[in-house]
Image (tube, rainbow, N blue to C red; front, side, top):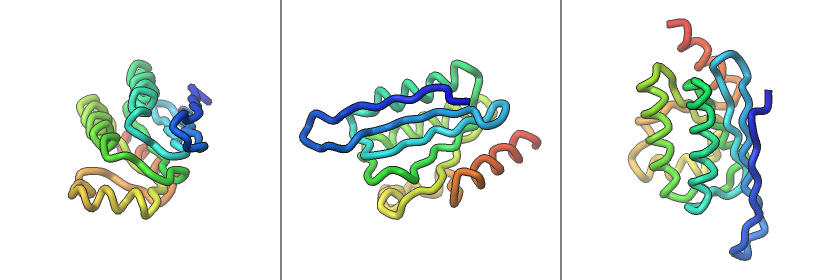
Length: 134
């Protein structure tokens, strides 16, 4: 079920689009798919998408980064907030299909062990589903 999608054309000369799609793939489990370059000015759109899930009581979220080519360092602060909020409500955030260019940022910031990762979205959803049975 598609819960929402946002798309915004860049005005800074970069002709890429950030596209955020949200789907509930199983009861209480959602996929947040991000495509494009995620810049600091996209934080509000990203936060609104995740807050929409939290408002619906969905705290198990797979964040699909497979379509991203760059994530600004400020966005990683949002990732901490999302993971913390999910955890405090019995859920989890799992990052899926993380490109090497983005994984390197997790590593260089020294935060890679603080998050959960899966090779692809299907694996992330399976991990989230298994966690709900514990």
